Image (cartoon, rainbow, N blue to C red; front, side, top):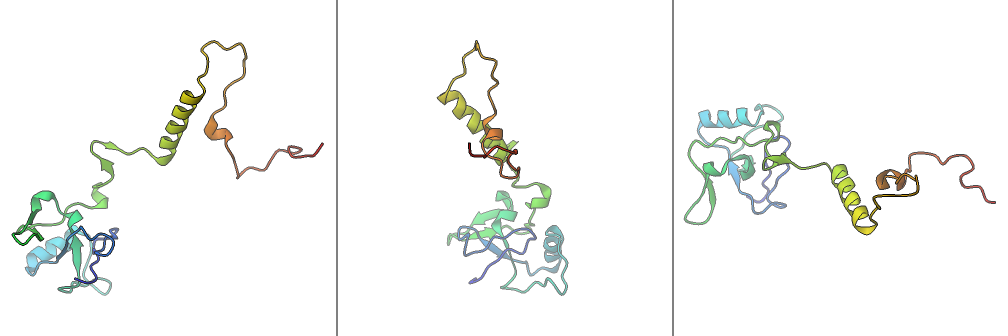
Length: 153
């Protein structure tokens, strides 16, 4: 298993970058192999062929119930295991019951928390100056400056 790559479309796992994963050969049983090929949404043909000792699926596509550790310490699959965890069935998108916020939402929240902790805004203000949103007033490199903004006086 010198060069192991996962055969599942959209999965870029390999043994070099993910040594903690186990990579499993396609089964010798033709019926079970057909189930695996159907599950990973691939068809055998000129662009994909199953070669024993060369075509693998990584352990991330199997549920914990389908795997076990042998006496020698190797990760193995139970008889009849079929891969079922893929990007197209939304496995791996969410963390627990909630999906992660986008980077923009997290940045906006961090900036709002930082502004509140550094410079609290008084409840009653005598000035009618609105407080600008720090995300919007930081820099906007896509807009041209207004005419006369950088004129030397």
